[in-house]
Amino acid sequence: MPAITEDELTLIKTSVDTDIFWGRVKLLINDLNYIVVALNNDTLGMTLAVNLFKYGLRYRDANLPQLKIMLRCYDRSNETRMKEVEKQLNVSASGLNVEIKLFSTSKELFTYNNVICNNVYDEAKEYHYIYENLLLPPKKQWKLTSDDLWKDSFVETVVKGKTISVVDKEMEKRSISRFHAIQEINRKISQNFSNSLHGRTKMILMGFDEKYLTDRLKLFNGYTRTPHTVTYHCNEEDANLLYNIALVEHERWIASHKLMGYTFSSTTDYVKKHHKCMCDFDHLDVETQSYDCNVVDTTIKLAYNEATKKVKK
Image (cartoon, rainbow, N blue to C red; front, side, top):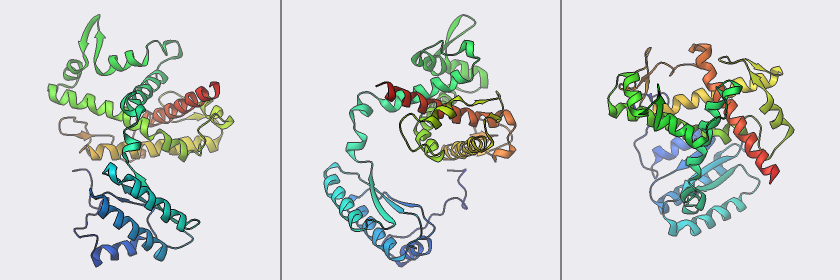
């Protein structure tokens, strides 16, 4: 993508069975947090993952954190065999700092919740619902259902008593074609999916490893922030933590837009895929910075709501 620069991503044209590849692995082995093996071939992928596993045990500094080798599974018929390899290798290296982790198996992807209940879609709608309501004054919050708010935001809405398509509204607002209006709406929708999926990561970064209600989660859910600012009303340590998670969110947002092909420009242009916010957090005005805080606040609120449901059950 145009926004990904050479200093962020280095592509090496070689094969996994060459001295060039393994020389590079040896050079980086102590700097890596994880390795993703996704070769579209389970046999080749598993062979490489096993070799990387052995290589990590041999060359990685024993005092470093655990290196995770993430192995993609493509063919359902290979899952049992690959799971057994994962299990046996991890047992053999128990207590050491290298581990293989299989991901994207059919069992994980094609679940009842994902396919029938469409949980991922529902979580994105719930995220949008909480986010939008937290921006409203208390007296105006929670007037619509999550389904109605989603429809009002992305399908059709009422303007001056007339129901119009959100696509038409976007075309008029930005003076863009129908094609680009649909693209922009899909971009906004995708951000709700991204934010809901990234929520767990943010909670872990804030130290909330537990999935149930805790006194600390109650405390964070009760914190307030001056609207349109990054000023949290709480102790300095927690305020700094929340601010830093907002920085993380901004980096996540930039990364997602780079993958969509966006580049920085002083003016935002959704046709040319230019965006003025693709810059360092410190270069944004305070109100724009507050958008990232809004994401953090929504993430905490969702986690609190989910934990409260579990306690009630």
